[in-house]
Structure formats: C-alpha cells, structure tokens
Image (cartoon, rainbow, N blue to C red):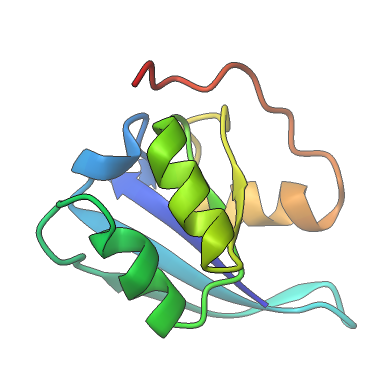
Length: 112
C-alpha cells in the first residue's frame, strides 16, 4: 500500500492543492511497518492533475488536512481513498497512526 501526504515544512499541509511536496510512503500491510518514503514535487496545481499523478504513482490512500469536494470525487473515481481532517504532524507519525487505527481526524479544513 502507498499513502500520499501533502507536505509543508516537513509536516502535513493543511491545504492539499497548494502544497509544494508530497510524501509517498510505502507500507507493508502484513508486517504493519513503513518500507520506504519518498518526497516528491507535484506537477502544477490544476483541477484533476493531482489525482491522475498520484494514481500513476500507485497511491492507494491520500491523507490530508483539507480537500475540496471535487478533488475528493476525482480521487475516489481513481480508486484512491481520501481521509481529511488529519493533524499537521510528520508523515511517518500520521502513517503509523493510520496503520494502528489511532489516527484522529477532525473537520475537512477546505471549504470549496
């Protein structure tokens, strides 16, 4: 499984579409551990570009602070699960919490 997390200053970015980097974290579901982490620069933000790009990178899940409803729909159409309202923590910590079913999420921080 691959989990994508938008980053700002090494932590989860509150606004998905305007982040400058993404952490793409590979996890071994059987061992419940992180195998690999890459930090990638996304293509320029335009509607529909990031879902296509992350799908090509074989991401299965996106964990974000906030994301617009249209983007959520586009990710779902691409077969990528979206989790919003995640805290601004380091990506490895967010993924550990996700793997252990302890990730606490709040409101979707995006209003469009």
